[in-house]
Image (tube, rainbow, N blue to C red; front, top):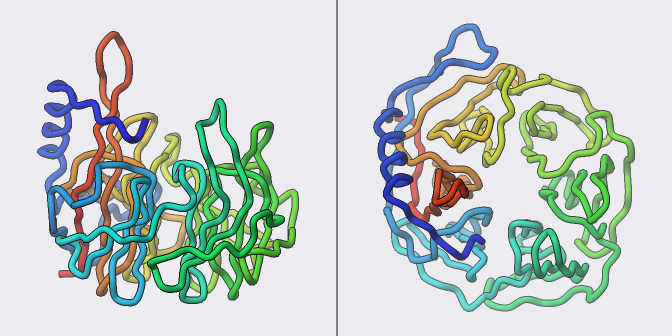
Length: 326
C-alpha cells in the first residue's frame, strides 16, 4: 500500500485548502491549558519539496554523527543539510517498517526482527542486525528471544533498549522488556497500569519516560507508572503523530483527530497540559522526525481523502521541513 501513490484532483484541492487554513504563525486552541498560547515563537523552513527518497510514511529519521539519515522502506538516504540527499549502500534489513522499527543505540543502528507481508498474512522472525559503519549489517543473532510481536516502538533508557506493549496475531500486551545488547531480552514488568496497548510512542523528558497514546503516563524506572492525563485532547481520539522533545517541551507532530488529518502540532511542557499549534505543511500522519543542528527536522507522512466509489485513497509526502526558535 505504501508504495503506491494515488493522487486525485479532489484530494489535492483539499490539501491546498487545508494548507491555506493553517498559516505559519497561527496558534490553535489548547486541549486543556487555560492560556491557549505558547511562550516562544517558532519558525518553519521548507528545505526541499521533493527529497531524493520516494514519498512514503511510517519510516524513521535519525541524526547520526552530524548527518541526517532517513531509514526508508526503499533503502536508506543521508543528508548534511536536509535538502540534498544521497542513497546509502546500506539496505533495509527490517523490510516492512509499518510493523517494526530501527533503534539507535551505543553509536550503532539496530534492526530488531524482520517482517514480510501484511497484517492478514505475514512472516515475522527475530534476527537482530547491527550496523556501526552505516554501509553493511552484521547479524548478531539469527533467532533471538526478542518478543515476537509488532506495532511497538523501541527506545533507549538507562543504557538499555526497551520494548513496551505491542501486539501479535492474537492479542496486545501490557508488559516491558529490555536488553543491554539487543540480543538477550528480559521481561521486567507485566500488567502495567495503562493496560494492553499497541503503537504507543515514547520520549525521554525530565529524566522520565513518557508513554504517549491518547493518554499520557510517566515513569522514572519503566516499571512504576503515573498517569499524567487521561486525554491529550479532551473528548477526541488522536493518532498518527511523531513525538520529539525540543526546547524543553514535548512536541507531537502531525497530530490528527477523530479520523481527520490536520496540519497541526500539540506541545506540552509537563505532559499534562497541551497547546495546539498550526503548521504550514500539508495535513498528514505517520511522518518522521529528529533533532538536527538545534532544530526539529521532519519529512514523510500520508494524507487520506475521498477517492473513487467511496474508497479512501492516500497521498504520500517526501518534503523536508525544520522548526527553530526565532
